[in-house]
Length: 85
Image (tube, rainbow, N blue to C red; front, side):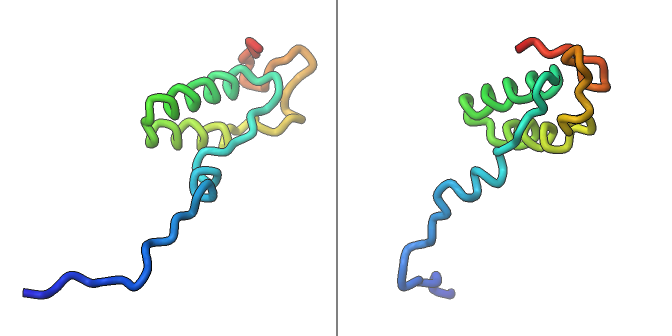
């Protein structure tokens, strides 16, 4: 049998760096899709459902109409979803 590895120091904790990398996102102003996804992200984080939280944050970051220039004057993204904020 082998003995388990022993380390001279405790593991390094990356504090908020990893969490910020995984869950930070910036929704487009006036986009209803982004607004709904940010709400979903908050609910998932509150429920500690980290997989769902990551998916919601990734969707906001990768939203095809996420750039502020794609929002029209009437508060709709080019997908035609009206913001509810």
